[in-house]
Image (cartoon, rainbow, N blue to C red):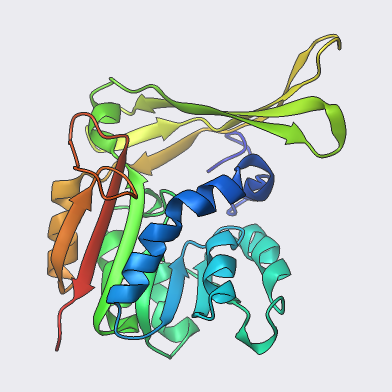
Length: 270
């Protein structure tokens, strides 16, 4: 992501985003808990790696269950935020490492029972990056290890039928009278493989002039992976038992209608 075309944050596209502030994490954790628990129950070991861990909320939840957890992210600013959770549960707390997914085996030489990729992480991997990343995940998992993930269903987005994610409204922790609005317009890039994403933060203060102020906006170009493409990449990386769902409740996946693409796969025994 880029703050603007001339983002002074340089190569860290998330340097000015605070997902901990913008996302309703307690509600999201409640919604996703059964999905996480089911993946762990099917895993050969109660350990997990959080791929593209962001501010570390999923890793923190997993560690609170007694799961040995490592989070990895290539954004230095996200890792800085995530490391605020280190030590919360003593020696059992989550550990966070800076690096890309294809560096996973180097970053942590222990194997895991499960790997999670939640929050639209995979679209930040281009064609040459996804195979390397999935191969690294397979190498980091125990035989029979589970990979569970979630990203947007890009079929309707590429077709131009979905132009925005739902508006996210959060109270401003610094001002009881104000709110933070998080908008995420979307647009197909025109090549049939990429989409443009415009995360935008507004500050709403009733009675102020102006009542709505633009805090920041970005233009992000992502690889709009579809299920057939992802399924083929998982197969090539050595994953079997691949399943696609339309939501974390494991509802039916409708390529032209589901808002999310949720998937599970298992590392084939070697």
